Amino acid sequence: MRNFFRRFTPMLVACLIGLAPGISNAGTYDDLMQASERGDRATVERLLDLGADPDTSDREGNTLLMLAARDGRVEVMAVLIARHARLNRKNSAGDTALLLASLRGQLSAVQSLVAAGASLESSGWTPLAYAAFEGRTAVVQYLLEKGADVDALAPNGHSPLMLAARNGHLETVKVLLEADADTEIADKNGKTALELAEGSANTEIAQLIRAARAESVATTVSVTVVPEAQGAGGEKPGTPGAAPVAAGTAPSPAPKVEAPGASVWDIAH
Image (cartoon, rainbow, N blue to C red; front, side):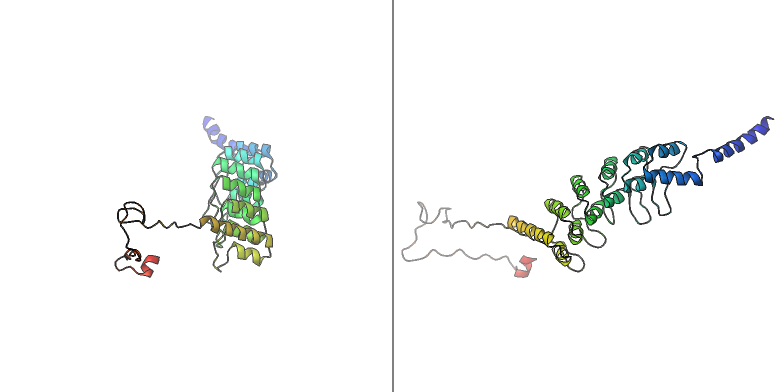
């Protein structure tokens, strides 16, 4: 009899698990994915308590955290982050939860992910580039404050400023220029943010970039001060102690010193 129960008990447990609502089965998978998308924290928490994987994903590789972040479901995100869902996991398109939240302009979701340790940079598109592309100014401002690289290039060779300028996002352009975005970066076609703005008829943005360029040039111009000529003992000509100069003659010019073997090409390069 004991042997019978020993053999029967695992089978009974397996049957009960298969029949129990919310435990690992096709219905549970659908329930979990849908609950994450609609922000149903209670259902997500209950299914996780029953053993569901916090990194469960759909056919495109979108995890529960990605779906919640994309739609700004911060309460569900809090549950998943507390259960150690992988912050920097990528879907089949190479997007992370932070990338999707940035693209959609979900500032609260972006803040939650960054606070939890999500990476601000990526080998492809960055969260800042996604936010700039869509003109998510608040997200752009926040990411810059947290140390995102203002000039990181997207796979198409465009900087965040170039993306915002081309797409006509005036306020985003202002924030990027205030963060000293480089206005001289050019894409593979040789076009800068200014030319991209002009090509898209974004005249106000083009004017802003021109003004930023002019200001940058003005602040980097250096003035060279030429010292006054001095006598052999360090005195200025005509001062007490200086060597006398014969009347009607000009002081001899200082000998020209050239670097041995130096040419204009060598100096310039």
